[in-house]
Length: 200
Image 1 (tube, rainbow, N blue to C red):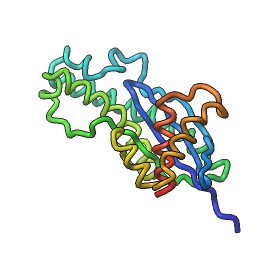
Image 2: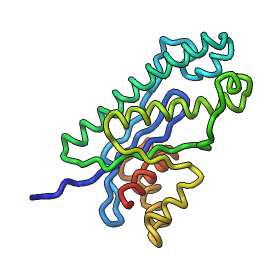
Image 3: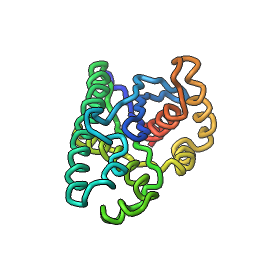
Image 4: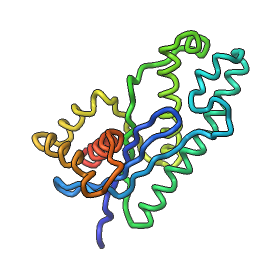
């Protein structure tokens, strides 16, 4: 019986959108199985791309309801987008080993009233908000999620690939020439994060 081939997803999010890259690794070669830009906001909801910025203008009770509504919509959109990737891969007989979600600081956030009183915390909270939507989506699809802080990605790569780490980084950076554009920093980081899961 042939063993199923293993794939992993890497995700890097921004405000209201992100990049998902699915890869498989065989020795030191990496294959991009899928890559797409996902949108996790509904343009019909005012302020949805920067929900905490928008919530500042609302009262505390109102902002809680607004953010809960935005979160439900973002989680639904993230679930639809990630499900589509998973369906495609499973249809091609790939076994999904898990997903890597890139984090910014990964710091814990205080209460909503404290967040809304600080511009810096508003930015942090928004980053967490959209990453959390994808996290929830992966968990609902029963996919193991590995959170990787962006500044620790290089360290994780070294731990996963040892002496081959820098060659793996170069391999992934140069994939743009074979897969064509877009192959941005988002795609490279997401692909590398996914590769570390397969190596682990």
